[in-house]
Length: 76
Image (cartoon, rainbow, N blue to C red):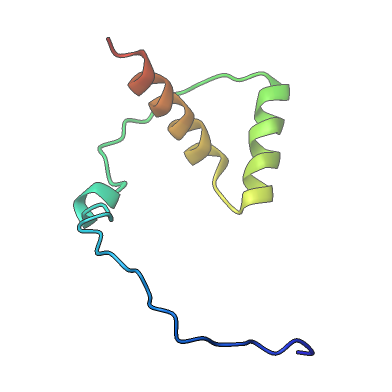
């Protein structure tokens, strides 16, 4: 730390933001799931497995979230 921090006595303008975090119920990902058999191209499966490994996630969960996202955005 070569550069020292210079503090001042300027007034701090702060405001309270109420309820900006979702409730624990909204964070729950325990939705009812149904097992299905899905045949994917090798190219698609390799993509999801690679992306999942890169982000430390499950490729199956990534596919499930992608489909859920599609469904939410297609509802009219």
